[in-house]
Each structure stands twice: as structure tokens, then as C-alpha cells.
Amino acid sequence: MSRKILHGPDDLEPFAGELPHLTDALSRRINTDQEGLERGLAQLVLTIVELLRQLMERQALRRIDGGALSEEQVERLGSTFMELDKRMEQLRHEFGLEEEDLNLNLGPLGNLL
Amino acid sequence: MIELFAIAEYPGPPLPALAPLRAVRAGSLAAICAPAEGVKVTPEALWRHEQVVEALMEDRDLLPVRYGTLVDDDAAAVRAVDARRDELSAALDRVRGAVELSVRAVGDPEDGDGEAAGGRGYLRTKMRSAAAQESVTLSLHKPLAALARADMRRSPRPPSELLRAAYLVDRDAIGAFTRLVARLDDRHPGLQLLCTGPWPPYSFAEA
Amino acid sequence: MTSILERDVALIDVVDRLLGGGVVIAGDITLAVADVDLVYVSLRALITSVATAEEKQLLPRMGSAV
Image (tube, rainbow over all chains, first blue to last red; front, side, top):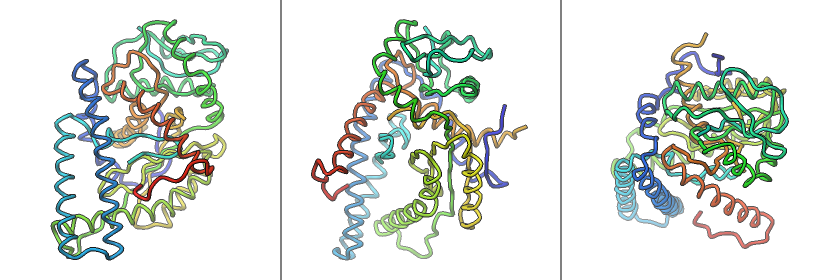
């Protein structure tokens, strides 16, 4: 088998982070009909939800940057988004979806998220 | 059932022997396939499949097909190719004479250094990583993309991955590209870069 | 000879490509959620054409939210 590494550090560990979890994720990939269909729909829906969540977060960050919000408002916004983030993680987990599953690859435009 | 490996031009050079491959003709294109043996999503199965596509790529331009694509029979393969003939031909033209190189960059995640916990801390971390992302785009992705025919960014994996991208590079520019990766690595002591390839043009097979 | 770690690290790139890239063809795809990719292919074609139209000033720009 040929080498695939054209350039890299002596210690490759920093690039091996997602490995243990990868083989796990791989085995969940085989379609089991109904389950696959449900997961497919969940993926679509959650992708849109995730898009909205990120848009809102970005908006909020811009407003904070612009100095338009009070300390208290910033704290509340932050906590809300933190909660949302956790909820999304739970939902993803329930459907066996990874972060990368919630994405649209737009070719030359890169990824949606 | 048959498993699809790649779309290439028809006619083409003889197929490599490492799998029972056949080139099913669909006009001026061919769907290169083999009898389906059940789709397993294990590292071994993925590497084996990749080996076949790379062997094919040694002497022809091709569009690799998503792993696990099975169709009923030759006629179904022909129908599938016919349905997207123009796009597939255009994509094949775009990748002609080029390979895909992958670049990932990791850096130390910014430390808290006494930042607020809770809501503010959450947002501040977000801001920091957005800033780090932008800086990496300018300092790494842009110069790399300039040496490539096309580029595609994937979502980097938090917390420490700052770049995960694919570049469509002319075969004879692989050396120059790799040397640029090395230079960028030197120039940014806080980052580590990994370049792998050559890969078949998976990230550029769809528009 | 490649070390195990080298193979493993490269596996990440293999997975990104084989499972997340490549031509998506209407077939009896046995990978989970792959049918959904066909929707994505169409959506992407639509979004790309909108973005191109915006660039060419044929369409007004989308809102500042994005």
C-alpha cells in the first residue's frame, strides 16, 4: 500500500483525534431501510435547524461586537445559545448523526455550515 | 447487483486486474463496475475500494463514485450515467490531468486565560475561533488555492482543527504544492500542517 | 512501509472522500442517508445557480443575516 502522507509532522497524533470515534460512526452508516429513512429525514431537518442556529449565533456575535448590548443581555444570549448547542448535540446523538452529517456541500461555495 | 467505482471515458485503456472490473459503456462515457459483494463500511473495505480506484486512476482520468453505490445491472448503470451525462462530462473535463490533495491544519486551541464562564465565555470562545478561522483562511487556504485548479473547504473539526480542505492540483504541480505546504508550515510555528494524497478527485466530482 | 498511525490518519481523509464525496448516482445505495444526498445534489445546483446569479448582479443580494 502506498504512502499517502506528502507532508506532515513527526508526531501525527494531533491529526488522529477523531479516530477512536470514527470506526464507531462507520458502523452506523449501513442503511437499514426504515431506520435509514428516518435518519435521512432527521438529517435534513436538523441541517436546517443547525443552519438557523448558526445564523442566529452569528447575528448575535455581530451585535455584541458592535457594542450594542448590555453585559446582562450578552450573558443571557450566551446562555441561550449554549443551551441550544447542547440540545442540538442531544438530538444529533439520538439520531446517530455526526456534526459533519448536518451539512450541505455546495461545491465551489464550500460547505453550507 | 453491481457496484460502481468510477465514471471515465469510453473507450479507455485496459482495466487493472486487481478486481473483476468491467467498463459498461454509456455513450462516450463508461461506468466502471464490479459484481457487488455487499457493502461493508470498515476501514479495510474502504481501503480496498480506494486501492481499486487509484489503480484505475493510474492510466485514465476519472470521477470516483460515492462508496457503496450499487445498481441492479448494466442497464441500470447506463441509465444512471445517461441521466447526468452532460454534468458528468463537464466534471470529467474539469478534473482531467489533476489529482486531489488534502490539507489539514491544527493549532493550539486558545486558552481561557481567565475568561468568563457561562454565557459570555461560550460566546467569547466562539468569537475567538471565528477569528482564528478567518486568519487561517487568509494565511493558508488562499495561497494553497492559488496553486490549485479548484479548492473545497470542509468543516474543520473543533477544537483544534483550523483547516480541512481539498485542492484539485495538476499532476505536474504536486511537487510545487507540497513545497508550499512545507513553507507555510515553517512560517506558522503555532500550526501543524498535514498534506495527504494524491487522491482521486472525490471532492470535485460533483459540480 | 507505512506505520499504523500513518494509515489511521490517512483513513480520516479516505472516509471524508469515499463517504462524503464522489459522484452521487441514483442507485440502490446502501449507505445510510445516501438518498438524502440526492436531494442535496439538487439543492446545491439550485443554490449555486442563485449565488452565480447574485455575483453577476442578476439578482439582488440576500439579506445580511448570512
